[in-house]
Length: 332
Ligand code: TYM
Figure 1: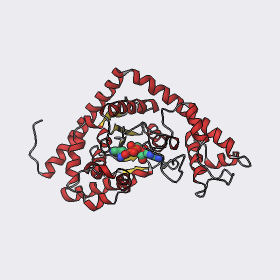
Figure 2 (figure 1 turned 120 degrees about the vertical axis):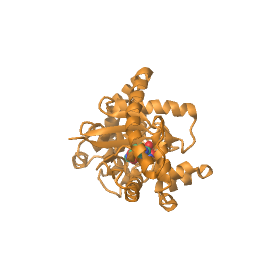
Figure 3 (figure 1 turned 180 degrees about the vertical axis):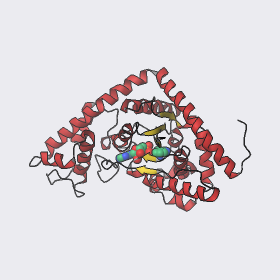
Figure 4 (figure 1 turned 30 degrees about the horizontal axis):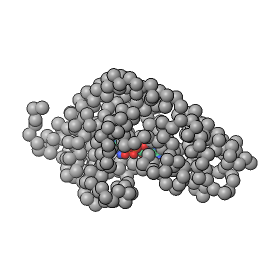
């Protein structure tokens, strides 16, 4: 039986965080045998906010190296850079013409981002969920593993698939989301009611996958908690709840067991142990990524091979879509 298809991606718009790792990449690794996977470094998405060209190039290669360091196997999965597959932008255009302004204005991420950068409200930022839909729909994707903040975007991809299929006949698979039961929304260490984000101006709010052990320990020790003094999994203690989710996801230990172990003990021990668990868990990934980054020829080979495979799959779908829409078939 043919394997089902899985697609996911991350923007190379900065250094990725523990949130990206726990909410997204860490869940990809184990799905590689069961699914036919595509993992993209989505650089077209990254330029919806201003980027310095040299840094974008560096961050793109770094993210690719981090995918591999986390355990993405390019022999099993197709790993590629989004801009190397022009069909993403092309399908996105077609889907743009089928997306309503109202649908995009309701996107909470757009509302948040536009508040933060009101001096740079470009059209790309507004239509970005359509590009994400194109990423997913191009490959007949069945499953999309993402963090909770991407749920609304996935809904749009589903709506667009249904809309296109209804208008032109069955073409796209309607994708399902995969949201991890724990750590689907890792919170800022400094403001635990807000999502941990790589664009946070307060570096203590997030842990980068590049942070050294000392830095990780410092950041977790400084994490904002509360004055209850009891390690408990409760929405009234968002800081502790967040650390519990991080601890549980890093070790695969249940939250219940962790809570039981810290009964009658203060936050000091719990924070120190959480820091240790995170620092030890991320160390091999950081070291491996650093090593891979030195081998540019290998990274080159991975993304070239990935682009070839992805282009072949995406090209087929794009030809089908163009034909249904009424374009005259092109010879290139
Ligand atoms: P991006 O680059 O912002 O984040 C990448 C992935 O990390 C997840 N994530 C989190 N999960 C838990 N806690 C957090 N604090 C946290 N922060 C980020 C995100 O949910 C995401 O899964 N539009 C997407 C990238 C994208 C994509 C796609 C994803 C483009 N095309 C197609 C899947 C399929 C984005 O900006 O993610």
